[in-house]
View 1 (cartoon, rainbow, N blue to C red):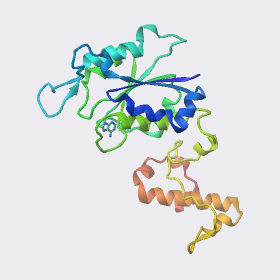
View 2 (view 1 turned 60 degrees about the horizontal axis):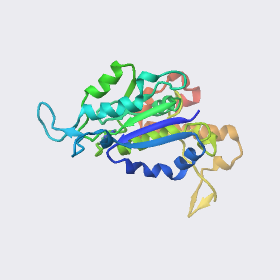
View 3 (view 1 turned 60 degrees about the vertical axis):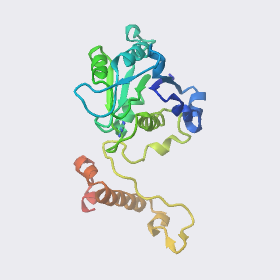
View 4 (view 1 turned 180 degrees about the horizontal axis):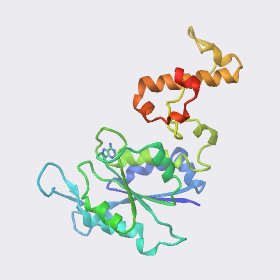
Length: 252
Ligand code: ADE
């Protein structure tokens, strides 16, 4: 079934890029149906204002709940959920939320309808996710990393790419997504990759890779992945399921 994706933003043109490259192909192949909406279309005042000063004081502006509610009531259509109209998942990028991971991308790739709300970085009224959760909607808030962006648009693009590339038929070669970093309960960084020539500007590829011994190649790559992960991302080693390690792994 086609995955319906609604994106709400004050800069919907930002998502014009979704008509390019793999996204464009996925749309024409009927895998995804993406619509970017302008939040201001749900305002009623001449200034089309979507934000206001923070209650309790402080710098910046906060997105008002009323405008978002008019928009989301319409897009989520929670009164009419049935087999034809399965439950949507509402997603807000937010720098103060749990990190978005490959696991989340995998889960969300099974959804039929995703609604993304792009807030500005100072934030949106916390009652918006609270209200829809209380009304039975699955609401998820995610940060894409420990840095601050100006708004949610880039974060939504990142999440959307991570999710949609997992859809069957999206990638030219589906095998290329099974061996990647961060997949499965055994998330290691990937081993280094090399192509031909075997010697280039005085640098040789590791000889074991041209030995033709698949067992040795697998072992070499696995050791390299373990060594690289321990060095660059010790936090991932901490999270590893020990049962996924073999005897040779323990030596590395
Ligand atoms: N909005 C601003 N910064 C963000 C971040 N790091 N992740 C998600 N949404 C954001």
